[in-house]
Length: 212
Image (cartoon, rainbow, N blue to C red; front, top):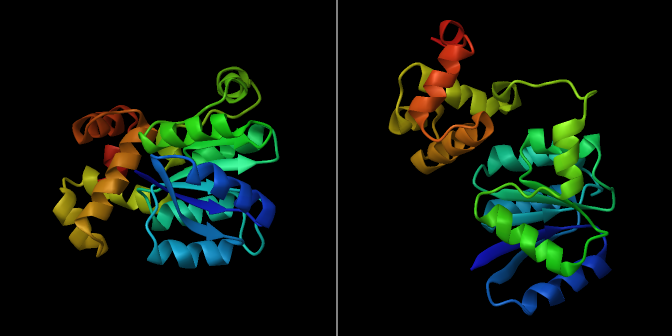
């Protein structure tokens, strides 16, 4: 069962999504929020697997909100569901930690596919977004490690110092499961499968002398 949260300031849209999810046997709506502040409060009390997030929430929104959610809940998969079509902003949202981006022009079936995709730990990219990622010559090239959040960078630095999951958790005063989730997201952003490969990436990128 995929636990889904919805954050959107339009009651009619939330109501429509509620009906869509109620008709599914593998998805359960466990959280609704109408603004960014309420969302962060509710997420602290109600775990979700996937968050369907609108970009135009009151109080806290856009990239700032995505970063706040990912920083506090690294295992949560954030799927942007916006009236805005795929553009360069969507690329920056992916860099900030979003797992996928879907415009509201798409129907419920596509939204359900997107939710299932990100719940499996994969990124959801529409053809338009794939084209942007592959063909945008004006978008500056960002090294994979430069996409790490501040907390992910702190975890990565400790990994480079030879610490294991338990050591990292003790050093940062977090749960071991949280440290493990940070490492999983780091590996995903670096495009590697193991911590050993992450160390090899750091060596090739010239990072070891800076962080050890």
